[in-house]
Image (cartoon, rainbow, N blue to C red):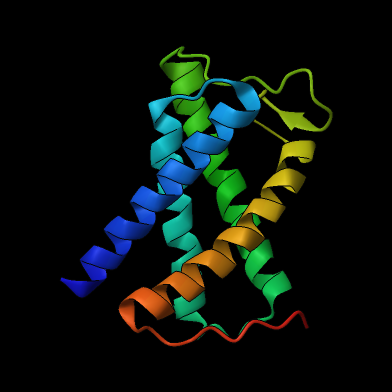
Length: 138
């Protein structure tokens, strides 16, 4: 039950944070972004747990950026191309793939990933008594 509580807490928090950021910076969001944001915050914590929080932060961010970009692409294909909901469109951005992911937003997401890794690690430690993360850059 403790793990389920941890995952539900992180998923909800990640969803609220990402949905709120979109509302602040874009003026709108979509419920699918709540789901995706929550899923990503759970991954940030899980990848840290898998490595015992010992991997350098740059590696954790790298794994997380690949995960987030892959999830954004898959979600984009579903919500934008298949369902036609037109939640976002990066066709006017440089280095984009099918309008679903692009390099500028991947770079922005790297900062969000770093913040999410730090946040999830410390929240799990302080709220659930999980191992204290030991972040280091190299």
